[in-house]
Image 1 (tube, chains in turn orange, red):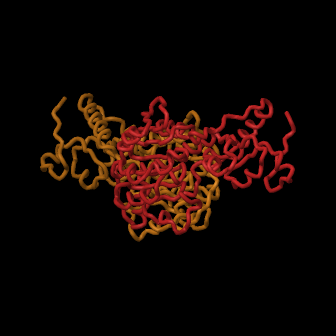
Image 2 (tube, chains in turn cyan, orange; image 1 turned 90 degrees about the vertical axis):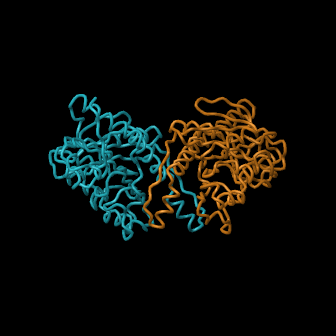
Image 3 (cartoon, rainbow over the protein chains, first blue to last red; image 1 turned 180 degrees about the vertical axis):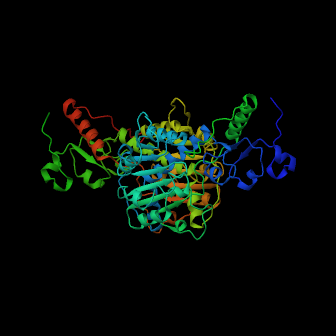
Length: 288
Length: 288
């Protein structure tokens, strides 16, 4: 295998900038990538690569997303944890504790609680299976048709409406693309049944924050668990911080695991050095 | 099958009080049971029967506990839900939200998080299996020795100390008996590693509330999830309500399911009417 020379961007000489072939990035400054004219591909340490696709000037640059089973497992765990948080009424009991109110709520069986997952990529699939294994009734929605055991699947816009109308807990795991930006807005959120809740573990702009607040304030939606926002870190002036029916998380649903992600990135790079073939890269048409 | 005459206590005639053979109870006034001199056995709708054993004057009365798989499943779900609540740092993120702090914490793998269950009856076993299925490292402790697949088991007092010293999340599912009252006190809680948390879904008096508060205040323990208390409903003057590191729940971890519990109670009664044999009753020596 050829000898690798791995450098931090800020330590590259002018000559090295001209010759660098691969960049390993998380959430890079697009100008830094633009300063590497010989790049053949980029290994992202993140699963979501919308900034790389839209802000990096080299429009033909191949982007390889992080597709780490450990990341999917961590996300599935987060989806289960916060679905149970909503299922077992933890936000309501927290409010009651603040007011010293001792009041029991009836918890339905998980089989009677429908959790719908938007996005059935590796993260969505893993989450759907984890919820199914724990007894929830699970629906899934994706752009293209898929068949999954134990999970009722929907695809396309008409199906999205049908799914939303039957959802108790909506979990967003979609990539941010032209097609998904603003997908959950005043109109689509209105299709959820009264008392439904939303979990956004994908990207902030998929969910219209103002529409969400309106639906929470009107009592149409019960609660939102948000790990991603239109601006991150969430500015202190954003009303989501103090909304009684919003749980704010600092983008922690599925953090990159340094050990497993390093192995995957080095495996991809080794493979490229041996074969000359760039690992499977993101479709610019679909954005993931 | 003989014709059954089922009456609410307050509607019994004096004659019916003298002839009643079976009582179906949840948390009855002991004086009411004392007013039924011909009782042969009592069907409890609860799994915990410590009040029936200690406060009902008829000391030879047979008590049949509710042993409902649906109750065990509901408890296992609660144990999983609040173990994930602690595992995924939900209390810390809630505090951060109140202060508008955007800060990420590292979440270990569930395989590196040890949840120990005290009490391996039907509820404890079901909870242990559910946690194991979701990747946690699970220890179990019981009075008598048991062997379980995938769960390291401990028994006896010396073993309790060994278990506590290796526990991240301690889940109490013991019956309240002479042997378990005050089992978790200043000394035993001190055996938990610094930063451990406690979930009590069993009975309040098993856990010394003052000792718990001391260990939370000193920073030795991180958090407590309490569904049961020395007095219920929890009096408004109790400091647990407002403690920043305590989650107060109004005895909801596993509520009796009316449908499944009714079937089990009626099955027990039918069986007794057909065979004359009282269903398996509680050991007064062991208290469960």
